[in-house]
View 1: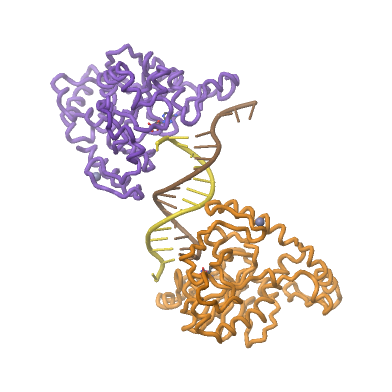
View 2: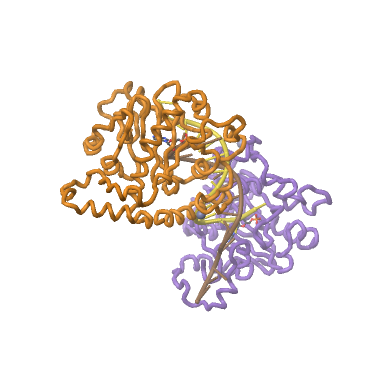
Length: 298
Length: 298
DNA sequence: TATTCCGATAGTGAC
DNA sequence: GTCACTATCGGAATGAG
Ligand SMILES: Nc1ncnc2c1ncn2[C@@H]1O[C@H](COP(=O)(O)O)[C@@H](O)[C@H]1O
Ligand SMILES: Nc1ncnc2c1ncn2[C@@H]1O[C@H](COP(=O)(O)O)[C@@H](O)[C@H]1O
Ligand SMILES: [Zn+2]
Ligand SMILES: [Zn+2]
């Protein structure tokens, strides 16, 4: 925990390279964090030295309120990727896939509303969210996926070859290791793997975290923090409602996720449809890991 | 595992002092193990060196057949307290109380019979078992209990005082530390705590170990290996059938222990009757430990 | 109603 | 359908070359 109440990354320290290499082509007045690299490299001393009890309490969001700190103090956490007056985009602290981001609306009324309700009550909010996701966040997430697995992907070969050609050109030789991914030539842009279609966007029918949040995640479910059956089923049953499906029609079963017990379903492999009894999570997990190895090489 | 297939004691090594200090006044042709101390002190080398495949297989009793080795090779295990042609008396390997012995009939027909059935089918066997228990085993167990807790027991004060007087008398000064407990004077014999009434004898209505065995155990349930709800309820519900209650009358509910689900009952403290939900084993355990501290000081 | 290992299940508390 | 901690519950194997 920092003094702002936002937990630091307990997992792999991939944030530095990822964040400094993201190429954001925002059409909205979104400001990139101006000091992400600086903060990450700064010494992390000052544990419980300066912050007073009061300051600590005021800025702490325990348990189900843990997302609040990103909304009130987006400048204080290296987990924040970008933010404006309406949204904060963060990296999920316990990602359930290689890419797992959360888009948090900042409006205090909206962000205390149940997502299934909010998207019907506030159509402008829904439209704004859809636009930001499509124009900005999915491209960002897709680019990150490509950086992670592009070199291993057979169908991304054409893009990767063009990329390699760019990289060895004199112009980029001087580029630092933290330089953004070079934009490939116009001709190769439309080629290679369509990583965006591996990104899913939606909400949980019955969220646990109190602040409204939209999940943006790659679909392969490869993650060390994906370790309970609820983790899998919350993203691979109708418990997960895609943003594009909103507004839901009246009577849609997804409006009553608990009643339909989606979360307790048997497991279905997202890739091949193979089924597993719900008490065989470990077997599912092993199978999903196998699928991941094949998927990333597609 | 030794080469005879009998596991050695994985717990506290109390056997040596206990076994050498037991005072057995057997009325039956029971032979004490002649070499208990010798064997215990002997080096335990020779792991899997000599025994041939065949010999090893023949003497191995894994899982639910684990009591078989004591019956076929009573001379091979330090867990055996005494034996004759009809019975072997051993220390339970996973005792559920301070004292926990098992009496094993050696007859291959009897010892493969369900206990609830055997005591009705073979009245001579029942009579023989009752006599041995009463005349020999209960006194042995009671004496051992007294050695364990006598000094802390208020009601055993008179006996303990007489015992101390004996010990400091010139005649016993030369006694080795492994000498049997001195027999107190006739006058003090009838005084002190009645430890025998703290010893319970009976069988489980639905045993797991395949060879017929009679439990002899102190009633306080103080044991580190008493760690599951079945352990407690198997000795503190009608699942436990006292030897003196045999033969059971037709229609006795204890003849159908599974049907009545005794083993899944809520817990009832053996001492004060306090009840605990079955899923609160830890609380029961803590309470029983508290009771133990009071009980031994009675 | 054997033990042991492993894993699934369930309740709690977080300030 | 937060996580982390603890405890309970549940099935499977249990030997050995
Ligand atoms: N302190 C936190 N910071 C960032 N993400 C979090 C934090 N706590 C929980 N999460 C994530 O928030 C999401 C909440 O999911 P849900 O409420 O089920 O829609 C999960 O994916 C968690 O991994
Ligand atoms: N290998 C063994 N040697 C001695 N006692 C054992 C062994 N395995 C299990 N036991 C005990 O045997 C008893 C079997 O109880 P039950 O079959 O429920 O009547 C339990 O008290 C166990 O602790
Ligand atoms: Zn599959
Ligand atoms: Zn009590």
